[in-house]
Image 1 (spheres, rainbow, N blue to C red):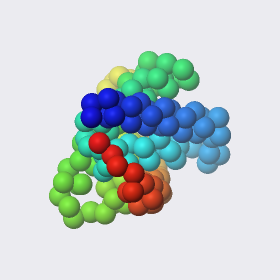
Image 2: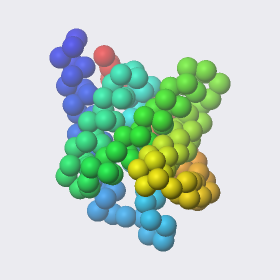
Image 3: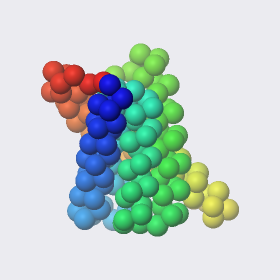
Image 4: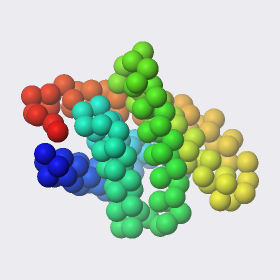
Length: 165
């Protein structure tokens, strides 16, 4: 069973890294720097709902480290890890509360990911002025979170027949 879970987690890390790569080479031209759909988060939300929190954390962290090493820099890894940590914390709390759908949980994840990234950047750069960027990032995080929640829900619905560890 441990081998099965290791293989599944590895496949999901690879899939999320591919989603991140695709997103990096096909930017969304919104004129606002740093805004992405967050396709890799489909895998994170899927893992949170189908495998468990420990796998979701592992998949997210390993993907961020790999993608940052290949396409970004250590500071981007720090910002992404901070965003992922806050996002997963919020999603886990809301999922356990059982009053939100997967879409609501994912929407909160999108918002808290942005809050975590801006908080890390503000701490590193020692400026609270960066928090003003949240006025743009929060609505975008809500929108992308809804889209990721819809796609994740559909993926879970279609993959229910496949036994997961």
